[in-house]
Amino acid sequence: MALHKCYNCGQMISDRAEACPKCGASQSGQPQSAPEYQEEPPRGNKSALIVVAIIGMALLVALGIVVFVPQMASYSPSEAVAEQVAAAEAAEEVVQPAVEATELSSNRSPGDGHYSMTGRLADLPIEMQFTISGRYVNGTLIYTGISLTSVEDGLEIYGEIDGNNLVLNEINERGERSGNFVGTMRDGRYTGTFHRYRNGRNDKDFSFYLHQ
Image 1 (cartoon, rainbow, N blue to C red):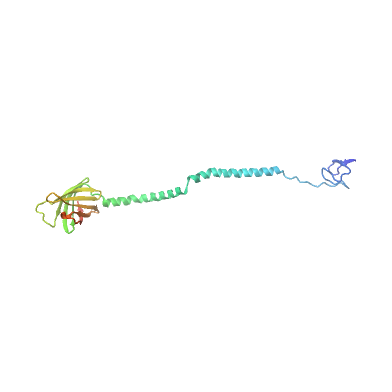
Image 2: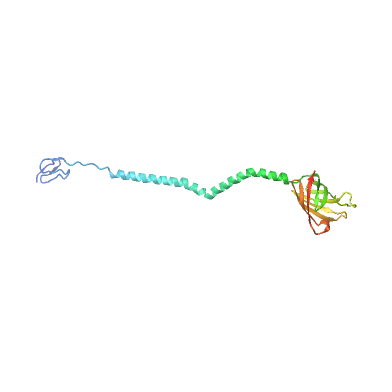
């Protein structure tokens, strides 16, 4: 068997070979140009790019979990509602003090001093003169529509005031407690109910105007 060079690449091959085992050029007839081969890009590079992309996406997901999940866990919907309620209450508190001040100005105790009141107990006209000192009240009561010959200066009254609530006890000419006034002082008036009227069991309503 004789050897000769490939017509295309010059490789020493058998003269019986129909094609070059190296470049694949046909060895029959005239030399032919070997088929052109295009080198394919290494598959390893493409795989490496895919791996890098996957790793990058995984890192982004992990970063999002670390940053946002704790915030979502610490900020619940109930807290959002609580903040809205707190804001609404704060807005109401801005208006509330003015309302309370108005109520106190009309319902507060008259304070220490000397006062008089005129009005009616049932159908009887009455005049009171009394002094407030702290929570204690002392004075006199005169039924201006009837004659009390044994008591020239009227009947004794005493009691206590708590805020705008006033309770006055009436002492008759014999020194006995004959009844008590239980009522409220509001807007310059003292209104309520007189109990044990004339030592009886029938209660009577009263209404007096306060003067200083």
